[in-house]
Amino acid sequence: MLDDDILVIEKSPGVFEGTVTGNWSVNGNPNGGYLMAILAGAIMKNSDKKFTPIMTANYIARCVPGKAELFVEEISRSKQFNRYEVRLMQDGKEKIRALGTFMDEKTDCEIERYETGAPELAPIEDCISMPESPHYTLFSNLDMRIDPASAVWLQGKTAEKSEQRGRVKFRDGKNYDILSLFLIADSIPPAIFVSQGPVSWVPTIELSTNIRNMPHTEWLRFILRTRFVTCGLLEADGEIWDDAGNLVSISRQIAQIRMI
Image (cartoon, rainbow, N blue to C red; front, top):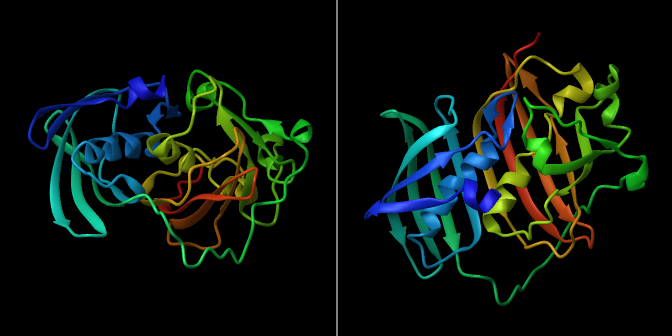
């Protein structure tokens, strides 16, 4: 389903059309990672380099399900990197502007060093499934299991640290590709829920995601941390790992926090 929902068609050089669907929404709002997958897909149709992408998106206004136009402009091209700007428009209004950097698939790594590892999690049978809901279609298409230590907010409780841990995979068994990993990276419920309970809304202002490796396992592990909340803004630092211990992606998000 995701492949169809992120499809874009080039109408003229650098100009694409697509459809934002309601199949990957949170409280009726299209998920930011889903929208980033659409933006990255438009860039990839222009770029001969398609690996280890870095995308940084500014969410200017709320997107809604419906038609969208995308405008891709090449910023620079070098032996190592291709850089692009892409804008998503709906009804003549700019909704998202993003920068994307793409490089060739790595063939040799002089240094492969992790100073941390995949999050430790409870056995999957002890984890709590994110409930499906017509207003949260994202979790109708993703099978997400929250570690019990993080799932307190689903039970009307809170914990000391704003840290969300768990596992996720596609319900339909979709194989992972670059674009699907942008969705996965932003699929984790806000970490602030763990310490504050479900606030009314945590809208994304800016999201940066870097895909590091393609996963080798069906289930992926995640951890999302928020350490600083000031003047209505928070940061959320995310990691996605596969079950074999390979780092899949890292992300940082700046969002507003709106309390109930």
